[in-house]
Length: 235
Image (cartoon, rainbow, N blue to C red; front, side, top):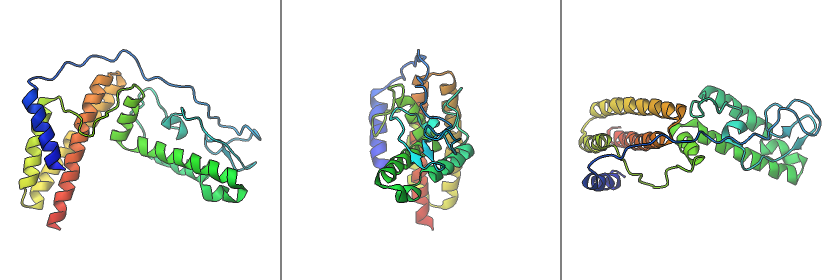
């Protein structure tokens, strides 16, 4: 993994003398009005979640493909869609899964079981998307047509580029767990700082800056995985 990243970074360093200026994105996040309701369209009773899954009259429906992850899990998408209360997200995820779990609907018929499977899959996907900063930021940028497409996205920040290369060399040459712990402590701080910068970028919003910060975070995250992989050698 490190050899591939190192080759990519060295190629970038050889061809770039300065990072391009970033411009403020002109538009804010587009939001489609949610079609989800807090009451059952069949019996009119309150629903345990905003999903079309009612255990009072045992009717279950589907959700629109355009329904956003925030709406599916009933977490606020504003004023900053990147800022998510992960404890609330977890609670809402468990409640949503309970409402549409296929095992609970299997006795109601094949149609209901299949609807429950699709609904449960949408809930799982929404949770995986919003749970961690990298897929959350990627999702929000994709809404703007600005998601990262490359497996090895170019790192334009030359200072960060140098940090990545130096850190990878330190990991490769580390001979004990204490050294790796120190590298991890420093990398954790960089990750926290970049996540804070990502949140600020979505606050403005400046999607060009958000994309640049996401790319930085992707590399810090790969360094973190490399540290953990190396640590296994000392166990």
